[in-house]
Length: 168
Image (cartoon, rainbow, N blue to C red):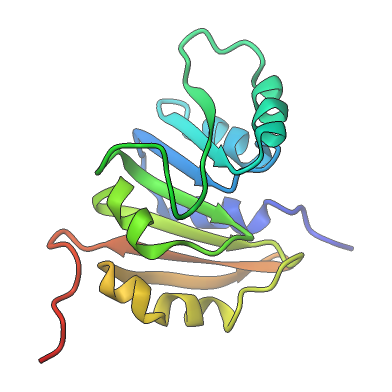
């Protein structure tokens, strides 16, 4: 019996505290973005996807949202349509992060969640993603990495001192 696709994300957000601003990158139809909005009822939650069609479909799923807590925009992991230091939590489900761009929109001390549902494997495993030099150079430090359901998740924190200094 297969576990629900969002099980790894549900396990990961237990470590996320109470963010005020959340971004899901490569949000597709918005299922995980809407999950994040339910999980963090005080947060403003945004989703980005490359496809205008996906953005329309995700927006149609929002329903009544008088406070404008949930919104979707076109964008990609390498070109996020938000200002610097905008989010407390950035989430990617079955997608690879663009480390520098993710670090740009994440406030210092903010969290990056990588969730893999089992439908798409994490290249080199989750520890491999956290060990990537690009994430380290962008200022990320591993927090945790665990299996969850049929998938797994990893959480990393953006250091408060910014990107790592180059080696001498």
